Image (cartoon, protein in one colour):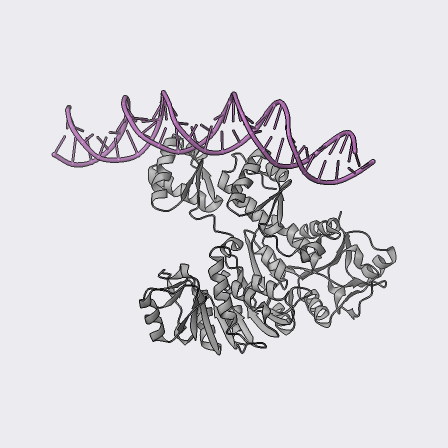
Length: 260
Length: 260
DNA sequence: AGCAGATGTTGCAATGTGTGGCATGTGGAG
DNA sequence: CTCCACATGCCACACATTGCAACATCTGCT
């Protein structure tokens, strides 16, 4: 910071500073940076163009913002492919009987399952999701257990050791789990270590476990394999995945259920 | 609060802030945002029009609201005596410093405290309330721990053995607790056995504990005495209770703090 | 019902920003 | 030494954003 230099910074140094400011402030202005480095705005613009092409930031009028800084609010995410998610919800609800103990994972697809479960009676719901807990506790004839832990803001759900430990205390009749992706070779994968671990345990613990995956997740690749996912009873989707994927998946165990 | 506006915010930054406020407060005003960003109201209006066309909010006279406003139920309850609760919130926030570990009980008054805490940095929030957890996890620079347990639908918060046990695991700098009533003889009482037990433990465990009680609770009678409430550092209210009540209370220990 | 003040709308001018072409300067390679 | 590649600055012009002013609505209150 004690730059205030007579000597101009070289390009890589500017790039570092731009990214550093982005990380700190979430956005940077071109004019502001031009003044700071004492270079012309064109130069800053060229720097930003270079960084934008490498996916390190997003260009906007007047400057740049974090790449994908506009993470869609959860309320938005739940609206995309709403029809598909509702179909998954209905198919999931058909697998639940009155009086069961149901685990609902975090995620917008499981939220759709929660909506579909409102017609059932005397359920006991266990969930890590704040939104689902809030929604279900407003229903009559439902008992809700919130699994505590540190809250992941992007999921608005509990993660971490406390949640993992709490899972072990329940006897679950049926669990509905989210997932990051259904990989081309028929594996279910996740974004985060915590999420993968949590889902893995639940797949192994629950009497029956189902993954709910809407069609946007087919063929994607996310970094973490969910161990023991093949212990799940099935995968509920809103549209048939490619035949090869179905075959690869069902050979491992889980059946594919397509919501109408 | 935040000056930081040597340079005006970029458009996407305004969009983010508008959506962020919307998510936490449920609605935003045009004039208020124009002042905050130091831009004209037309500019905010154009921002909102842009966001409205993308389905991210609903325009209303004077501002915008959430696209599909959720549940007026609790919002309504928290609006009664909103001014008083906001005053309590401000007084409570004055007792909190950046970086502290804060426990927030369930209830609409503690929700007002949560709102007032948004200007703090690097807080760690522990709460049993679903609504508070959801609200706080949307704030930047806040870590949220949700204490799990069975959800009481009327409180929309975790109660019971799991919550009690989880409380013991945290080292709390300051706790803000609700209560059912401030009895005529200067005792703080509660509606339920679980609630009383939970508040009792927290009053004893936290480094400093404060009860937040709005004036509607003065002189009422509820069945359960909160044990060890006199270990609390204070009681925060929005209007002075009768002098006799103050005297009876302060003789036991807690000081009375009146929010302005 | 009517009034005052706040809010929404529109056209326009001013300012700020994006883009491409071209000139200059620097350093290294031939 | 020249030549070339590269980074940078400058300029002109196109475009986007913003604020202002004038006028149309709406809201809350008496």
